[in-house]
Image (tube, rainbow, N blue to C red; front, side):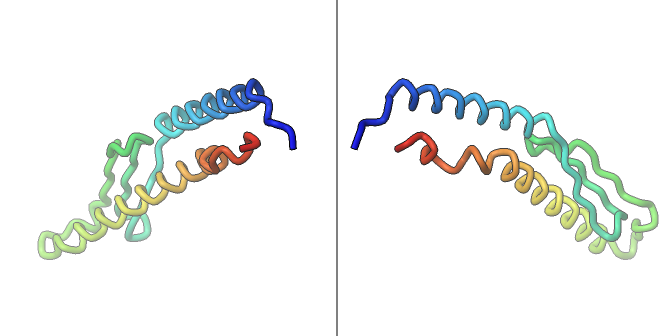
Length: 104
């Protein structure tokens, strides 16, 4: 069995690192959206996880039922957060499979 070429392994590792950094930058520059109540509440998150926008349809604002509005906001935030995790998995997934492709 022959030894793996260390120069080739290092070049592949460097290429993988560059791809990883590009994917991370793409994620941070992205935005994702989450909605609840059939679009009555919408949360927009930046790729860094920061809330960029929150939209609440006036139809859902009922002073007698603040709890429903709170639930909708939390639901929209959770969906946006899941969409951000899905985006990260999509962009980083192939790169996070480890070093197996390097002949190790």
